Image (cartoon, rainbow, N blue to C red; front, side, top):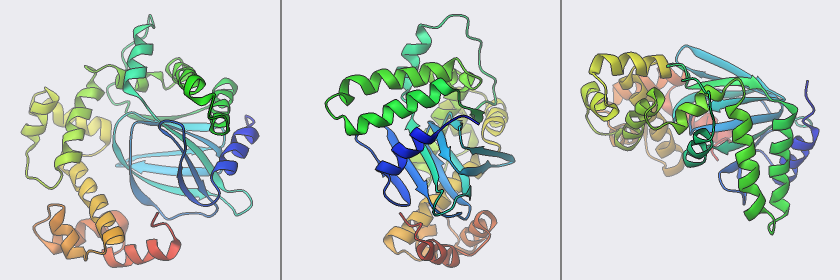
Length: 295
């Protein structure tokens, strides 16, 4: 197991309690949890998530992944993953650094690479063990939180180093798809972006296929290969996540939230919610508030 003690110390020093913490560094977030968590659906942006301590389990459709100390998750497009911390204690909390990926920086790095092969069609996310060099770069990046005079100059350089090491590692194919605007993953990502913005509206698979620049049959096949679900199932998950936010943060009832995100029937909203979260909307929101997971 690779040594992540310095990285863990940096996260603990800048994440004073449980939750997700912003940092002065662009697109860098810190996550800490001192207890196990229930599975919760969260929309992941294209990101690199490196665990310094503990373990997390993530699923989407029929795909299940676990990543723990010294390993990382790469997500290549906006995906509604269901995640749960499955290894954490008060004196040994789950600790993770998240870097949201910059497509422009990736594209610039890819342009300077030679001999890279096209990524697999279904490579939208994956895990791997981090190298000592990758852990060291992440640790040096977090140290810049306490060096505001150095961060504007050095943080972009270390970010490029991290991305370079990811591009040349076992999950590099995912990142190359992100940086290539005409890759299959980027084509599907255009449709996903539309779904995120227009989830409450009525649209067809043919509409999404046009946005992606594919035939309807090819789009449906590739969308399912990448996300492990159909486009309409994906839309429903986005609707359910937004409805949950409306209930928790704005106090809407289940019926009000369901209508606002595009459901025509409260009963259908409740059925879909129970199918995903295994409990009713009311019980789920109560459990989130009781656990302190609202933030």
